[in-house]
Length: 390
Image 1 (cartoon, rainbow, N blue to C red):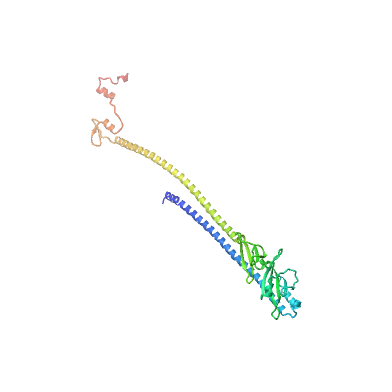
Image 2 (cartoon, rainbow, N blue to C red):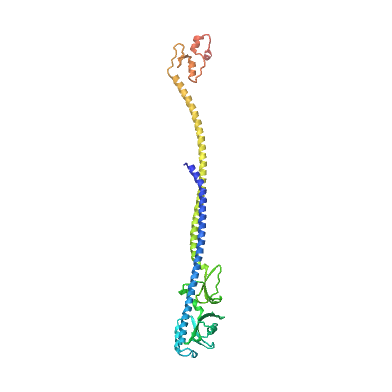
């Protein structure tokens, strides 16, 4: 393959290669964008799973607290049932000490209240002044209700949870209701330390949607909320996460990927620009080389014509010279001449006059005249050379 054919092949394949490179780059960018969006959806899905898991963990923790208090109420109700003193006289010292000991390690309990069966008397173990309105008391009094849990709301403070247990005497007669007053704010104290919950907002609300503790949260395009129903309790716990925080890892990965893609794209673009510039310079150089080649060919053609013309003239001169040399050789050789008439014999054997032979074999021309001796000898009557003597 000649250089011109190779250059033509390169020029012919250059644009398809550029188009293919651009198509590959566009496809790579499209795949990268799709991968980034897919990773974002995956991180949001993982965030949703994380939010639901944390809501469940927090709900199970609250349920565990409620169950612990309920078990303590059962133990206290059993102690009241088996005390020797009648309940009308209040708690016995042993019962009061037992209840205090049972709820000592339950700081979420603000007080323990025993409401007498007549509904007019009550005893408080921790002697708090929290106002308590037990709306389920009539159910305990007139229907066989073993336990109940209900919220109590206040205007300026957070709501309380009232966890109650039916109390009977040894004859299985209803003698009152034992209620644990629980502070709802305790459910959310230090939850991020021992439950590893990194939510931006949590809330506890009842079945009617009334807020018991926490913050009022809502779900929108920037927030994600997950709820969990507490088992065997009429409460829900809600956990809110900001999508911005959930996508922190995705943003870091995306920033890194975009930086790598940008660097790759810029490198490819610079390479393409350099290739185009190199091609442009090469085409200019090839154009100048072609012009120089054409000029050189024209110069060679002119010089060749001049040399051919000079060679033609030289050949003619050589022929003339050769002919002259032949004539010079003929005249310079041994010439057979008649000893009487002075004729010369040529190569064909013909005798010719001396002047005719010399004229044929040279450029010499003859003009006839007569010498002085011949003039006196043959023309004595004519005074041919007298004028010269005078």
